[in-house]
Image (cartoon, rainbow, N blue to C red; front, side, top):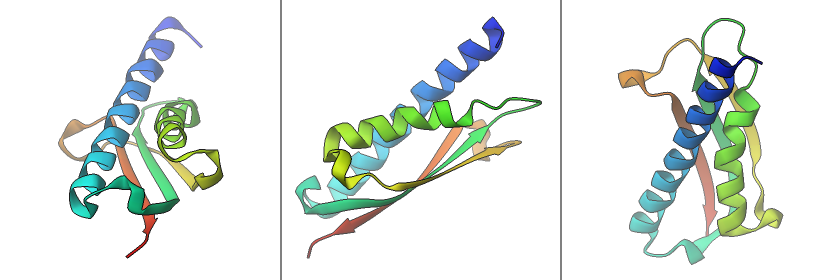
Length: 103
């Protein structure tokens, strides 16, 4: 992998981490507490890439690792990672996170 691709993967990984933080903030605001989350059911990660890039799973790792840090490895979700040509508003990464929660 050349230097441009490594830098691009690193930047997208940072974007995935930030997107996961935002997802947690929205969940906390909606639920009142993340303690209500019993597990993360699914993590879908769309990564805007072009050409012959195959580093999408490394980008998604940043979001997965944050969710593991917050909820523990025993609540790991199934994960889907997609490379896409573009995302709305030019964002580099988009997440879909499905939580199982208690009432």
